[in-house]
Amino acid sequence: MTKLGKTWWGRRFLEVLGTFIDAGLLANGRQYLTTHRIARWEIKGNRVEAHIRGKANPYYGAHKPPTYVVAIELAPIPDVAWSEALALIGSRAGYVSRLMFNEMPDEIERPLAELGVRLLPASPAEIGSRCTCQDAEIPCRHITALYHLLAGRLDQDPFLLFELRGLSRAELIQRLKTTPLGSALASALDAPPPRPRPAE
Image (tube, rainbow, N blue to C red):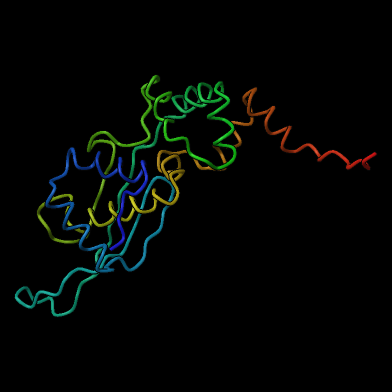
C-alpha cells in the first residue's frame, strides 16, 4: 500500500485535517482511495473536483455502485497579503533561488507566518467541501477520500498549495522576478554562456 503524506507538505496537510475531522472518518476516506473508487478528478483554481464511486446497497435500492460528485475548495489568500508575502520572500536569496528553480523550501511557512499568511488551512472555515451523497455527516467518507488524494498530490507537487490558495506557479515565478533578488537571478539565468576559449 502506498504511503500518503511521505513529504513534509502531504504529512502536514493530513495532520491539520486531523485537528478538526474525526480520525475514523479520515480512515474511511483512506480506504476509499486505496480501493480505487476515485474515477476521475481535476483541479480548477482553488477547487478540486472528483467523481467517486460509492458502495452498492440493495437494502436502499442501490443495486449498482452510485457515483458521487465531490468538491473541496480552499479559501484564496487575498492579493494584498500575497504581495506582502512575496515581498518578504523576495528579500531572502535562499527562498527566491529555490522557488525559481521549482523547489519548495520546507521552511517557507515561517516567513509567511510572520505576516499571518498560511498555505495550509488551519480551520474548517478555510476549506469548504460538498458531496452529492446522502450521508448526514459532513465531511463524509467521499470528501475525506479526496483529502487523501490531495495529500498524495502535494507529496508530488507542493506548489499546488500556492495554486489552491489563489496563486498559480507561473504567477508566483513571474512576481518573484519583479523583486530585486529575483530580477538579478533571472538576468543571470537568461544571460548567454561565456564563449569557450582555447587552452594555452
